[in-house]
Image 1 (cartoon, helix red, strand yellow):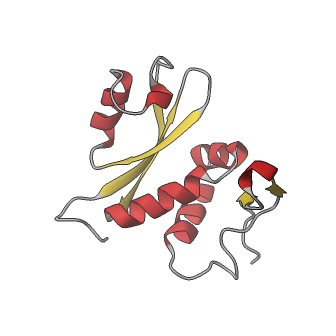
Image 2 (tube, helix red, strand yellow):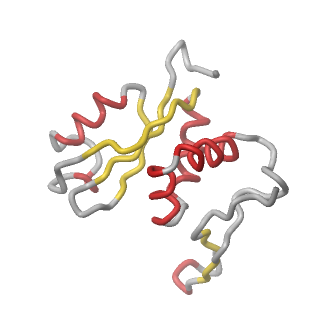
Length: 133
């Protein structure tokens, strides 16, 4: 696994009191979650405790962790919940997200796409569709 000076970066999901999921990366996930719980770091988590870490995965280099984090943040809430609930789905999604080549033809593949005027014609991916087998 690629590392940055023997340091492995991790991807994690934290559940807030209102059931929202927060995505982040860190070298030491437990320490980072404690910092979030203490009100340090992301404003999105301040005052929304208690916080519970519901998912973590070793990614490797910081660059790769940032790419995977960005892809995870684009998933719809339902797919993030599937990632938390299903190890099989998490393994499949992580394999595709970390892959430099497309998984079975396309990644990310949208099952729904919307165009918003405020996004100036940008396409936003809502849900990840499982690659055809």
